[in-house]
Image 1 (spheres, one colour):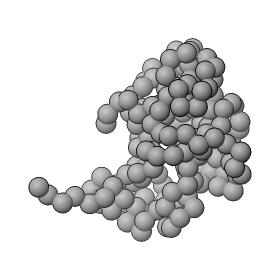
Image 2: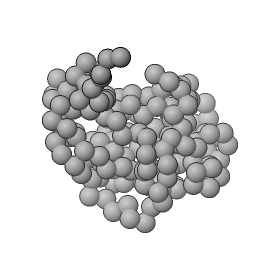
Image 3: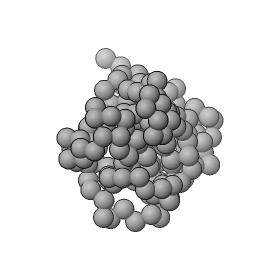
Length: 163
């Protein structure tokens, strides 16, 4: 069996490994200021990801929005990969539309907001390139993801699809 590097140290397919674990969660619309690194999310709920927010946070509203935030550390190897243009943020599957930020910089989005059928890739695997300009080496980097979920099906960072 071959020893493989951690996702953060992998220089062939480098990925920010942040999606699994405890995230801060906010029920509702909010706005882009929620993505700012210095934003105070102390009043938000902790939620395990991946999960359907309807079950994990008791958020049952149909056609609803929610925000996720999580601090993470960037290694020197991950930063070098971002400088080389090869670093990815892998979210897994998101139900339904998302806007994704790193340290307040928008790095990707999929789907249309508040539009029924506005996301043809409702549960497709999501992965976005992360530019070096959005990161710094060390702790206190922030991933923020704004999700809009259509209907009453699964909602949030559910990660049901595989890459």
